[in-house]
Image (cartoon, rainbow, N blue to C red):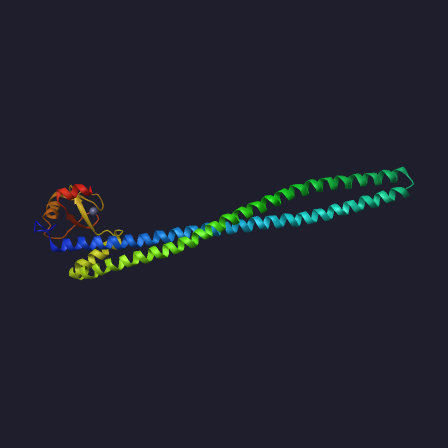
Length: 248
Ligand SMILES: [Zn+2]
């Protein structure tokens, strides 16, 4: 890379550092993604738990309703029997008519309650079926989650081992930069989403994709001093044609 000899050593080191830091960011991102996958599955399980709870509550509510209806129905049956007994004793046809009406009313009530009870039974069955299905899904998902947690733990361990090696490289390289340069680099990385050192292609900064003034671009190409993008302030470097087009 340095065959031209005029490339500033510092630029090379900055490029190396940027490469290392991007790699470290990549490791962190990988770990974040893996943790995110687990969090999503956990959320999905929690959602199912709430749905299961809701189904069971509804079923219980309906069952309470059912019990009340049954009591009312039994009361109506008792009333019918009572009125039927009274029929034997009444004298006038008006009394007779009144009792008949009461019996009819109670019969109608019983019929309505019976219809309602059938509907409720069907609804309870549906809620219980839904709850059972959700529980099945939840069991499967929990199993997957446990496996996933183990896998992620393993993967994170591996990533962290690789990360340690890369951090070692960084700890060797970073002190070789002038403190002021390193500080500026770190600030830029903070401000610019992790990218402080960027390539130029055909006079365009590859960090913000704005054109660099021609005179400054010449300086970037010469590469014997640090150049900063006038728009995004990133540190610029120039790579020779063959590699430049490979990246473009
Ligand atoms: Zn820029």
